[in-house]
Length: 315
Image (cartoon, rainbow, N blue to C red; front, side, top):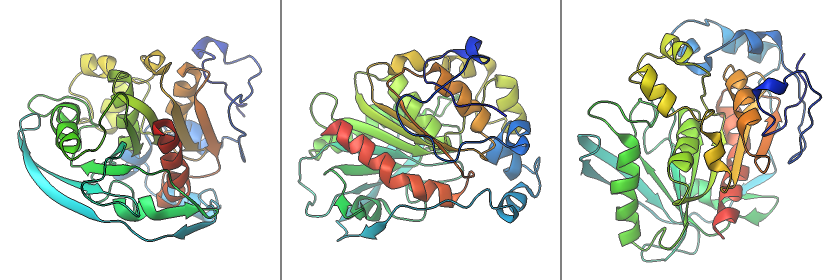
């Protein structure tokens, strides 16, 4: 059984005692099923791990406790679309405002990135972007901020021939939001994502440390090699060179000046990749490793904390 991991420890220190230095780890423990799985949701989605979800639910591995949450008044939201030159297609997006604010308000901006097979409407799971901003944990509201979501396709938010979702975010979506008074000023933008979007949020922060002031990744979909990624999802990266260029583990040092939060369940098949990421992250990173799987229950349990973390980084 593996022990806890320290951010920044490096991959050559696996045999040394490790302790969490940033956040208390709850219910830590790796099962053999997690260690054996190498590609998580994509493996299940592609039929490589039939029945994995059912087994986890039967033995209680996916049962997580949610924080004491209530839903306050929901602010307004607007959905629209634009033709993206970076993606060579029409892209839908949604901008949501926090309670007490409306279009025209000047606010920090959080870009929420959806998971595999998702879109701008499903970036935050079963709740809308406006509902996510209205969630209260322990009676506390989130810091005031706007949320924007956009269609990123299924290419893991990295550039593919003829389709560059990261370029769409930086060169097209952010300027649209800034024209509306959102995310203006130095480092007034943060990012959060789930699964594929969790990988994307880390990639966005690594590629643009001058732009992103805080990043949170919930159950990030991370592989440790191109061969592993290609075997599970051939469309995730265009080539081995593309994987190397956008490997968030290799380039984790780029996050040294950016507040980062990563959360993963111990029965998430992507967890081995998250372990490798944590060892590469700067020591300042906040890491939450708890009981849970790669499913909606875990995503929902971590969403308020992830948004609050990024909101504080923007405050």
